[in-house]
Image (tube, rainbow, N blue to C red):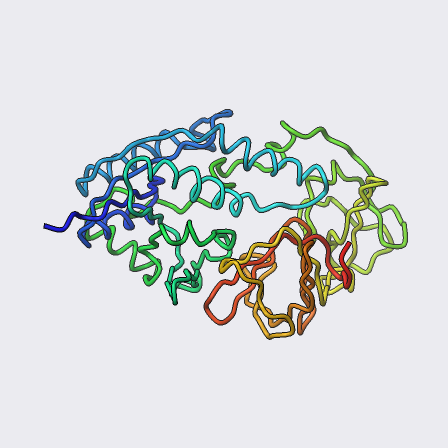
Length: 367
């Protein structure tokens, strides 16, 4: 008899990874669950429920009849993800730790461990798809456009994708929950996690203050008028409206205030009024630390779609130039609050080509 392929599934204790494991078991794979613990600092039940998540993952594994192992990647997470996360915030940028967490932990440390267990493939509960075309592996969007997570996976390479299965890629979220309910999985109604990767849904500013010192300064308009005080530039992001604490009495127009920039040299937070203020709109950007999934650089002056944040429709664009240091992307329509530190991810139809880290908006030549 042909030996079953062994698949190690990353099980987080949530409904998505639970159903991924169930589907693979039903498809005839030899399935092993792997629960990753990646955060140890103040790991408590209030914000970082890894203890309950492990209990849920073990309960699911028992229900569907598979083995499960717990592994601790806290050291790798701190060195490869969290240190970068803090450095970016200290430099005034807004990083996306979920993207780095995927490439360095979920699809590197986890993949290495799984291969050590004799795995042929790994699988996760991400909403995305993998397709092989002429020996190259493509990352595709999920069928459920509202849940598609290819944006967070754009830094995966050919070796990682060749070993990866995404069992939920063709399913809608409601279908996933229905499968879980019918199978009697204890996670069928469990709420989705929306916090920082592995750190939980804790108050963000309070959390960041433990690692980065408060450095108060002035909030100023582009003209230099002081309209308030900030607690530290690292606590704010471009386009932010809430939490600025700017009231009336500044001779303003009555429109809401938004963060439009950071002057790191003077420790000044630049704020403007109105959602469509010109300083919040960019028709181009410069991206660095590029990663192209195929290993080949895409064509320049070709119409693509791109996202500069996760919850965003594709924006038609062209890659105007690519150098060893980065690329310039020009959009057909100005984009709102293009934020340094975030990722721009480029698509051709449903295929995710890759992308890079936004260095600055409105930059027509490389820094």
